[in-house]
Image 1 (cartoon, rainbow, N blue to C red):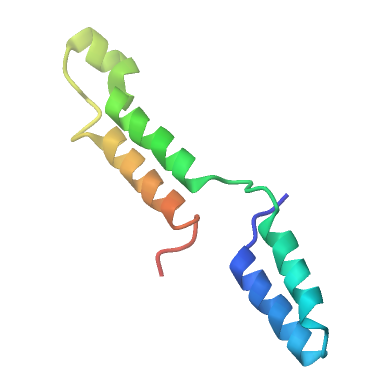
Image 2 (cartoon, rainbow, N blue to C red):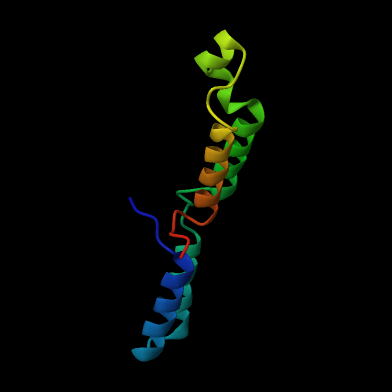
Length: 97
């Protein structure tokens, strides 16, 4: 399975329909079929889970914190990593550029 940009795909369907003089109802039916496909990746759900992980304290299982009562993981690096993961998820895994 792979993720696609459904909006871009629908633009291509419309363009091909116009280019090849396909009846508009056929292109509309195909676009509706694309819209009705299940979402393989729910961005809001993933972001919500990551936010909850951050709130729960991602570092709570760290052996250093438990034994020495101080964080050796450096300036909240796990929280920073989760923030970075959230940004990657929000942009769909695409490069920032």
